[in-house]
Length: 213
Ligand code: PRP
Ligand code: ZN
Ligand code: MG
Image (cartoon, rainbow, N blue to C red; front, side, top):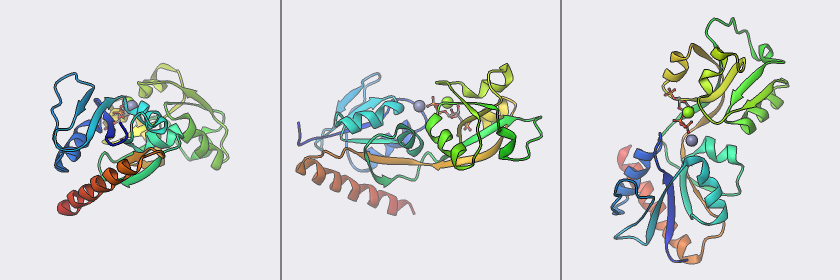
């Protein structure tokens, strides 16, 4: 078991397609039958695990997966003890604060004493603290953008990519607190063989990236 690499990628979501594509472009072949949560590569000593992105840093920290592809936002928020070994350049997005479009927003001080709904309490808390704003963080696990329009919170802090989710929920982006892209994270407890396999994989990934530029 310590001479294969287990690579965790997102099962379905914004990183899935590009994560799979990257692995394939590295020449690693596997069949991913629909609904399969684990598959073995046929020409490289690796297994691919298909997981919820938010769970990936924890699996990598525990060494259950050796590598993971996640958004930096997810990795940072998790505060797990993992190594970021490479930036992958896809799934770029930002973590931003949004308020109702009709709100005449003047600046961060407007958030003083307000409530902000988010799935990123850690990153948001750090940002507010650094900027000396005391606001109430209301942690929810999804559909954050609905919160202001139903009176659940005054503002939101969530991932923005195209901006269409904000727009369709009557919100506008007022502060960007973190810029993110997909990164490869690794366990800090790799065997010597696994470290060698990781080096081979990183060599291939860099070659793929160079070919694209
Ligand atoms: C993010 C975020 C928004 C949406 C924004 O969710 O929570 O819902 O994407 O993207 P847009 O600006 O292009 O509309 P994500 O896809 O990361 O899924 P998750 O929150 O379920 O992990
Ligand atoms: Zn997620
Ligand atoms: Mg979402």
